[in-house]
Image (cartoon, rainbow, N blue to C red):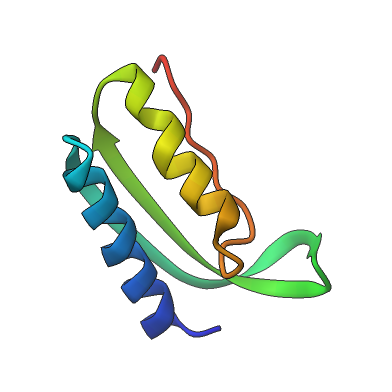
Length: 81
């Protein structure tokens, strides 16, 4: 998995958020890094953080879609901060 594909995924997720009525505040592409621990027999991953604003109930749909996406190893959607 390379950084170009990660950029495409970030654009796709940003599109989902906008379609659901949210606002993407910032996209940080941290690049390829060594994982703290192995996930699905992988030691490296491409890190991307998307900071967005939206209503509370809206969090569930992007989170669900990210869990279904096989190219995403971990997704964290913090709330209440």
